[in-house]
Length: 262
Image 1: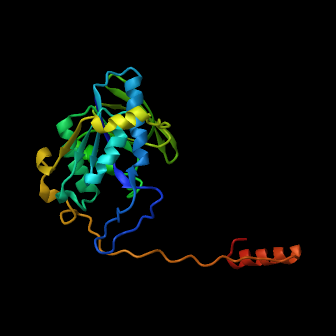
Image 2: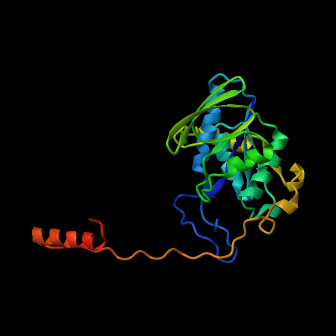
């Protein structure tokens, strides 16, 4: 079995996220890191491998600029055997559908039995990339999976649903988006961190994986950014300071009643 894990480079959690008004794209300046949700997917792949399944290799796959190599190094330090970096100027500005298509074309060359990814990215938070990739690969897909058991080529998955939990059986090959409740990702050892840069990293462009350039990029995406504006500022809160408890209570009750909260 070959497992591919889709990972993404995202702005660090401490970086304030904003849209570049000239392009409509997220400003990706500042510190960047491996998407934290994807670390759960890597850990899930490692647990499948360590659980006795005959896993040939775990391959981390990303699409992004040259800086995304650091996210791949982090993924390898967490357990991936090697990585694939899809990078091409033609891909810049791709929407979710175009990104899913490009990633699917890259995965086709790997021919994985199982594709894992985090439930969302820490920047776009669209939650849908797994389903889009699965559509282009013609594979079944599940989202919000919090428990994963593999027996032969059958996966038994428990997934979070709006009304509780579903238990679903699915045949591989498949695309599974895991929730952050599925596991607690391990910390990479110093040896793994130091050795990550020595692991095989395959850099590919659109032509290497037969991506039709007319289907990717900002100009060729179906979703087009038109404008953006900041949300309205919140009104200042009301502070009630009074030494008289009874008068304070009256003011609070009046404030609630005025807003029809009583």
